[in-house]
Length: 160
Image 1 (spheres, rainbow, N blue to C red):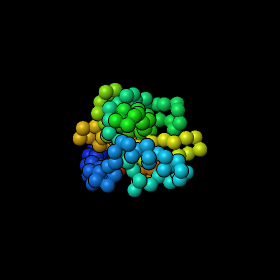
Image 2 (cartoon, rainbow, N blue to C red):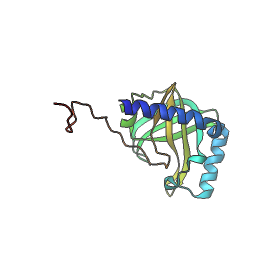
Image 3 (cartoon, rainbow, N blue to C red):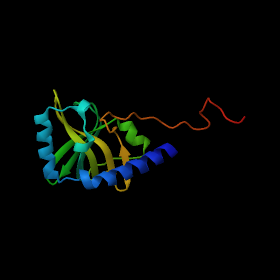
Image 4 (cartoon, rainbow, N blue to C red):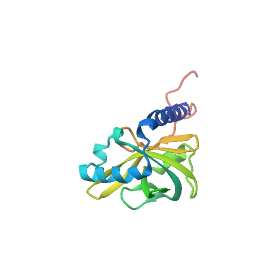
C-alpha cells in the first residue's frame, strides 16, 4: 500500500510541477494533435516534453474498448470539443480506487500521438479531485496493474 501511496504522491507532485509548463488551453490541444500528425510520431516516440493537459467533464468511460488502442477509454468534453483519451488497463484505476463516472470533472495529462491506425490521445496521468493515478510511463508505455504483496502472501518469509 505504501508503494501506491508513494506513487500517488510522486505522480501528484509531478503533475503539479509540470503543470506550469504542460498547461495548455484546450484550443492548443487541436494544434498539438495536428503537429503530432505532421511529425508522424507514434507511441514509441512519446515525448513527455510535448504533453498537454486536458480538463473537462467525462462524457463516457469504457473499461475494455474494442477500438484501437484496446483498453480503457474516456471521452472528455472540453471547451474546445470532445477528446477520446486512452487510459491503458482499467484494472490499474481499480487498484488505485479511482472510479470514472459520466459527468465527473477530470484532468488528463498526456500526448496526442499518431500511428498508422490514426491519432490517439495517450494519457499518462489521470486526476479526479486530489487523486492522481499514473497510467503510463514517461516514455509512453502503459503501466501494468499489480497488487502489492502483503506479509501474509509473501513466500519470502520473515521472522517465524
